[in-house]
Length: 520
Image (cartoon, rainbow, N blue to C red; front, side, top):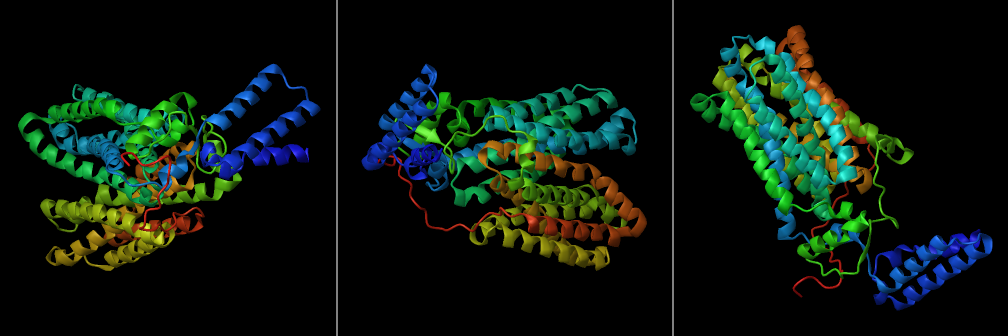
């Protein structure tokens, strides 16, 4: 038995697996000799069936004549090319449209109230059905991404929420509106984890936090676009035209991206029948990969399994990080949506005009975009543990400071600055959390891990309005803003228990040779 283990260990030396065999002749001969020794030992202990012998011969042939490429190392340590930046742009566009469609209904409710002669309270359940659908869609979408591919799952999600958004333009009843909105939420929720996973797997390790954050920060950008679009379309053409545009534009974009957006290179590496696609993709990125290359995933000597499940998130090596991510996503989304849903109502109740209150929420979101980008940049220098715990601490202090401030319309400037700081830190923690989740899980369960964490966060999203209204009814504005601090204290503790934080990265690019770079 010891001889078998020794032979097998030599065969699967990581050094051999990450370099082309013909560039290491001594190692090649050692590998072949070791496999022959393994075959001899197996023959002596158990007669080898013909099929097994054929597989062993094929393995010997491939080791001798094919170049073995560690695709994870190639991407993680490779260059950050213009083509990769374009891939991130294409992925980000899908999330901008996700953000647009996610907020169309909120902008259309006043028109629906008027046309259907219904009070605002009649739409509360309908508004809650979308995040409920997103919660379920996030979990399902992540699992599908691991099984059928990130790109396929992402673009299928876009087409589904776009088609259902288009269908909403035809409804004439509250019940049908709620059903369609829930189903659209499934697609909206399924898009985000796959976009985060896809963005993380297109780029080198040092750019991963920034690429994922830039992708996810497109959600509030899409929400801003939805507000501008609604302000111009609804007065002129009505709310139905808004949903028509919200359906047609994503469908067109998805069909284009189906043609030009490639699948995740790590996912392709796990499907031998799709290695030709992977070779073409790596060449576009800038590596002259030989046509007879064989691929493995970074850090492993085998291709990843294709049927990921939620059970994989709770094996001993991931259990602690999974629970930390669940707590972080739940309470951070809870806090963020308490602000998004009720900040305007809180300010108008304190004497601010509708315009001033909406303007405050706008600056809150602008602070969020800036904070998210800044957070991603800081992570590249200091890593995610220091950065995210620091941002959470600033959010806690800012929330307590706002809770202690009087909501005085005459002192709006100081309050506005605090909203920019609070919104910026809250959004920075939330958006960089996707990059953290992408870092925690390996490729084979990354979509499932991100999707499940987002789904848990969506529970906080659904509960946000109830928690915020409870705080306002029982303690007014001070209690309302204190919920931000309390929630972020729990986020701080949840982030602290996570072990697989993103390490700091260096600015210098370490070259990885796979043949020679294209064009050289």
